[in-house]
Image (tube, rainbow, N blue to C red; front, side):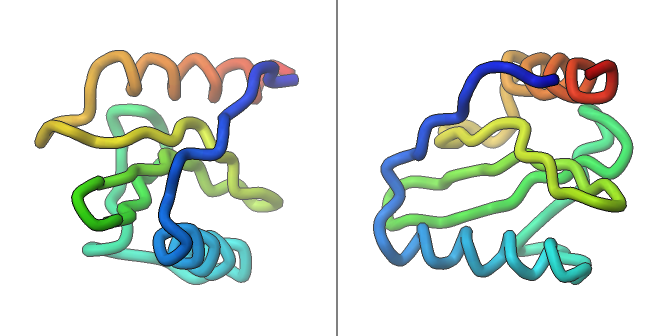
Length: 101
């Protein structure tokens, strides 16, 4: 069982609606591609980064697609071109905990 929590980021209402819409598409089996989502093989198999632009902020939701679930691994405000090592390590740790739970 994965423990901890992901706090709701301070998305604008528009960004919150976009994130919810894109997550719903994933839940019904849609395969999202750029510019909405990109694969993150550095984290693991079936892991992706959902991209939400919100005015001056750029939010990312790291997720994994399983047969029966979309697992949210991390939500963060992306400030650099490259995903930080810390975010990648946190996401890998959460996958391991989830798979071993």
